[in-house]
Length: 99
Image (cartoon, rainbow, N blue to C red; front, top):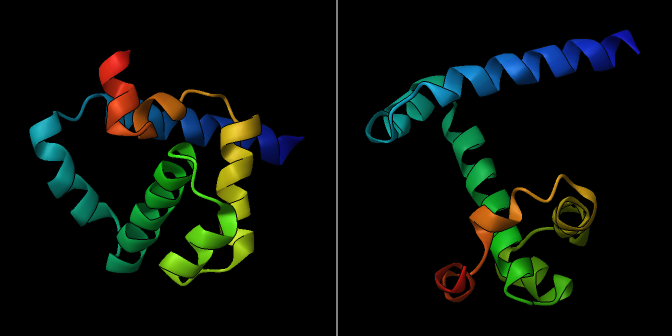
């Protein structure tokens, strides 16, 4: 339980930090904070979510991105059982225009 509480506290701290960053500065801040690998991994996760939201099958996504089906499945779990907030940011452009 203590680990969970610590993680929750750290998550709030990170969210608070990013909430103050202006959009024009965000790319530079991310480049300063993250390694190239971390940036690449984060971009890949976002791409997985976008493809899932667009209705692409998990196996197709795994083959297209040269990743394991387990990695794609994690993205699927986020969309199904996560907070739901991320869906409005990764929705295909056609869906965003309708909202």
